[in-house]
Length: 291
Image (tube, rainbow, N blue to C red; front, side, top):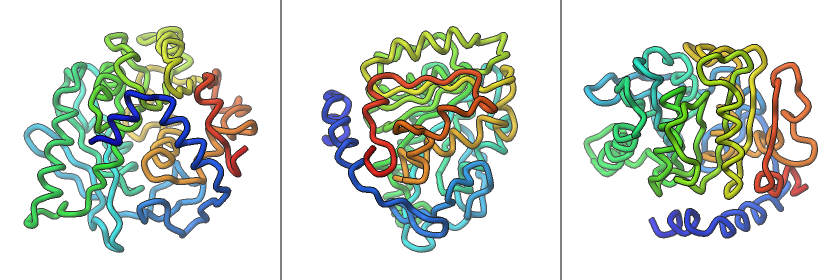
């Protein structure tokens, strides 16, 4: 789409828009709606969200989504997911269900070799068709203007690779493998490493982060986490990834202060993070109240 393409080509324009948005001090309170009408959860990002969840296992994708979509006329942002090597969505089912409980539609590629992100990106195509189909439960309920990519290990690299698609607005690579290049994308990235990961060393994830100076990037190293710590319910990766996705895809202002501004909530939290960095482009994004 033209607007999204311009954001990808002109990083400065994206940053200018973010700066403009950041001048509004309003902060959503629990029970109120975020941008697009998704209910706020306050700062309870690690707790189940307000939606009951349905899981549809199909040939190419497994879809995790609110059981009743758009009950108040809201549309649901999309997260496309890539598995680690040899894994299937069921390995991460509790994490993906968690995101769906917060109002996301998760299109998880069933492939155990996700690196090129072909099946992940195809999930967007499927949802585009269903959103336009009057006979589909997704009809008119998918927010195709707000799409994120996420994944673990090989799927983490795939999450970055998927962002070559102009429809993707942000990406969350969890302990990403090396077969990717941050130059593929210009969207905000939240790189996540595990302090005790002996498969994808934190230094490898940090190298990707340091190669991302052209876009807003945040690096978080989860204290004590091994390579499989995100399996199942996401462990200590669950709350921060949910907050990031809610901020970028739902406009959830409660999550802004966790990542941005001089007093960001995660910056001094040594209980969770053994490493935390924000690059120059991320530092330019205002915190709550435009600070």
